[in-house]
Amino acid sequence: MTAEPQQPQPPQEPYPSRRRYHREILVLSSLVIIAAFLLQVAPDRDRVSIRNVPGAQLPPTCMSRQRLGLPCPGCGLTRSYVYLAHGDLWASLQAHRIGWLLFAATLAQIPYRLHELRRPFAKKPAWWAVFTRWFGWSLVVLLVGNWLIEMLFLRGS
Image 1 (cartoon, rainbow, N blue to C red):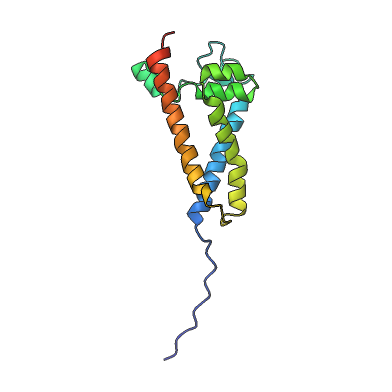
Image 2: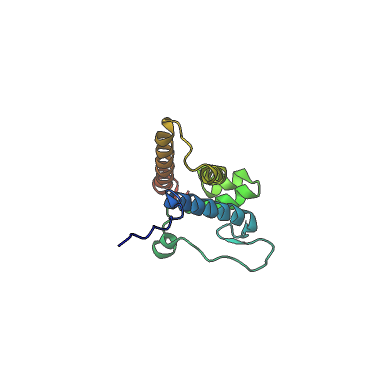
């Protein structure tokens, strides 16, 4: 009885989930930035609509505001992004005080994810993991802190 020679297996991509993750974040970030350019803030300044399409106002997206009458930490971010995409920094800041920072972080995802897809196993400096974790948590703290300030001190003024 002779053993049959095994067929060589095609090489598998190491860490396919990592590449998939970078691809998904790249697509989502790109879609968010593109949408910001395709939308405009409605005249009531409370909702957004499709640019140059009269009456194409998008429905409200904040369930907290709809159900409870209270804004969530992200209320105003869509309008802030849209204002920034059209070059109106002051209106962006009025819509959400840290929208500009989150917009910049979203925009920075595009070159970063493209780099990661091109060179997924490139060695990163030792400080990189600390920086990314710190930056991510800082954004969360700023978002929630901004919301708390809004709720406790500025709501209704």
